Image (cartoon, rainbow, N blue to C red):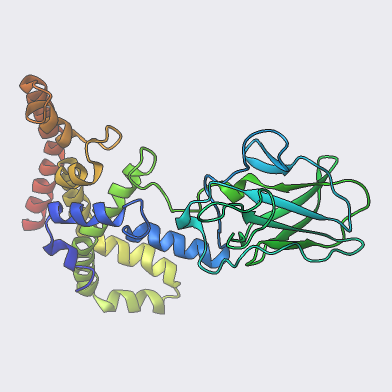
Length: 329
């Protein structure tokens, strides 16, 4: 019943359903909600899109190709301050705590703080953690020496971090640019790349019940004696399936194939609703409607496409009629 149920829904309603399923926003689209849920099981993204350093000269950090890099150098045993601005409220985690001073460092370690350098209501000292300013948890921090990453850390809830095993010599602190890109939001199902597979998936969902019912009926009609005789003769299950089941099921498979071929040639409403006019999601029936009634203002071209559709469907219809006559004989 569950598999056959889509047959009771019109193509128009199915298109509306899948238009909602394929919504880009994971809070609205089921497909992206599943993808984001699976993605977050293995990798939890915590990013701050749009955040960056304060502009102007004599600042402790600067922008470098999307990443944030300290202008000065540090060595093991020191602490680094990395202030950021332009952090949007919606990206500030609920578990973020007030920014704290870097923890005391030790030989071979480098500590620091990454925080939102903005005091509500104004005031406070720039480039230093002040009361009321929030730490930025979950930011990935790297220590770079001679172009190579020599140590890594992730900020805590109060924005502090500690890098262990920092080699001797001067290093710069870098916040990779993936800290400031939007988190994974799923696939763009209705974009130009995936729109065709998305429509194919919805079409299969609608017609799988029809195919299942016919094939199940054909399987139930196969004589069990023929299957048992093949097994007694020493045939494997694969040989029974290929040499006995498939040949006896061939008439039903042909009915399914011919019916679905005719239906897929004339599909219109499903593509019209899901595609939304995307030229990458156009079929002959949709193009015929567009040319004749959808703004193309070319009834001649629409008529020509209609004749072409008839010519394409005609062989399948003739094959079906011929098969029915052979079965009567």
